[in-house]
Amino acid sequence: MSVRELVVLGTASQVPTRHRNHNGYLLRWDAEGILFDPGEGTQRQMLRAGVAAHDLNRICVTHFHGDHSLGLAGVIQRINLDRVPHEITAHYPRSGQHFFERLRYSTAYRETVGITEAPVDTDGVFVTTPSYTLEARKLSHPVESYGYRLTEPDGRRMLPDRLAEHGIKGPDVGRIQREGAIGDVTLDDVSEPRRGQRFAFVMDTRLCDGVHVLAEGCDMLVIESTFLDEDEQLAVDHGHLTAGQAATVARDAGVRHLVLTHFSQRYSDPDEFERQARAAGYEGELTVAHDLLRVPVPKRR
Image (cartoon, rainbow, N blue to C red; front, side, top):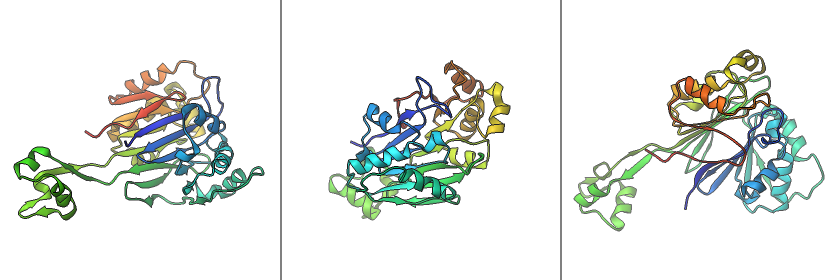
C-alpha cells in the first residue's frame, strides 16, 4: 500500500532544546524516501521514528549550516553499516561540495554503498522520474541555500459510471488507458484530469521569488518560521521568516496544508506560531511541527 507522509525528525533551529532536535524530515512518497536536511542527531531520531536506512533513496540538503547538515556523517555511515542495497543520491548546493566531502569522510568507516553525488547550482528541474520531478530554487540566506519542490505528473481519474455507461470493464479499462480509445469511445469520455500532487520544502530564507515559486499550488508546504512577527527585523537580519510571513506565502500560493517548523529556542509557547499564522489569513490545514510527528500529504480533491 502506498504511503505519502512527512515524518518529522527534528524541529529546532540553530540551538536544539530538550524537546526539539536539530532539523530532519523524511518524505515518504510511495516506495521512496527522501531525507531533507539531516541535522545533528538525525540517526537517533530515525530510530525513534521507526525509519531505517533502507527507507532512504535521496538526501536533499538546502544549505550547509550545521543544524541542517551535521547529521550527514552519521546517516551516511549508517547507510554503509546497514549495506543498503539500492542507490542513494545526495543533492546539495554545489558551492558546498567541500562541506559535503568533509562530512561524508569525517571519520574512518568501511564504505560499502556507493552514494551518488548530484549537487545543484541552478534553478529548475534537476531530477525526472516516472512518478515525480524534483525542482530547486535559490533562496535568500547568508550562505547559498536552495529549496526543493516535488511534483507528480498530472494523470487521469477513471469514472466508474462513465465506464459502465460505455460498457467498458475488466481488461478493457487498462487498454483504454494505454491506447487512448476503444472503438469510438475515447479516454476523455470515461475519465477526467487528475492533477498531480505537489510538495515543497523551504528552509532558511528571507522572503524572495524562490519561496513563492516553490509554494505555488502545493498540497503540502514545509517551511521555516524561525521567528514570531514581533521579531521580524531579526528575521530579515539573519535570513529567516516569521510565522506570519510563512503563512502569508501559503495563503497567497493556495497551499492546502502548511507545516511550520525550525523554531528559535527563544520561544516557549508553540501555539503562538499557529495564532500568528491564522492572523495572517491562512485558512487551510495547519500544523505546528514537533519532533516525531507524522503528517499525511493531503488526499487529492
